[in-house]
Image (cartoon, rainbow, N blue to C red; front, side, top):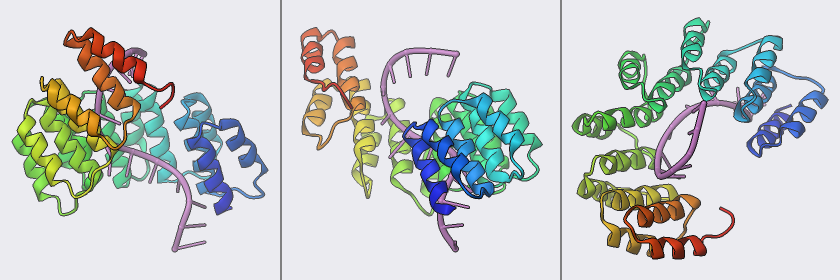
Length: 248
RNA sequence: AGGUCUGACUCUUU
């Protein structure tokens, strides 16, 4: 059963909802974890109605089931329902709190996000990474940096969020400082640094940074394309566009 | 014991 459950989850990640469902039905026995995997499959592929139906059908629901549905509502733009679900949950874990926090943060509900962050019983890396944009949007970079410094463990996701917070507020030097201090970098952190250059008017630096990137994604290309376009460098934009691959 | 849920980059969008 664990293997089939993993396969259901894999199909879901690849957008192969039909295969996930077929396998789910073929499973000789289904426990709550496999039901949750199918629930998550619907959720990840934007099928809120099917997720709701499955949620009601499930013989047993655990905190993970509730968490999946909470996120599913938010992804469909139903923020209020998402919160109501959180309030109705029989049991909450750290993921439930983080999920609600990120729902608020990602939808611009800055005050609600900060409130949740302060009342949640425990916090981890995910909580801090989720709340950083709320601090950044309100210009409270010192608070954000203090929380960042207090965190005993930091991963590349948190470092990148901190870099981005500085970049979004025009603090190019501080963003670059974070970038240079990162113990580990990846394509996403490179893109965040690229965006920090580009959106703060450092076109030459952005161009050079882009040119020496070990890898580029569609985000890197879009960033250069938009930067050239908005700065009136139409020929450079056209050239960038022509160099873009057809796929990401 | 293990398999399912939450966090970072551009644009678009609900």
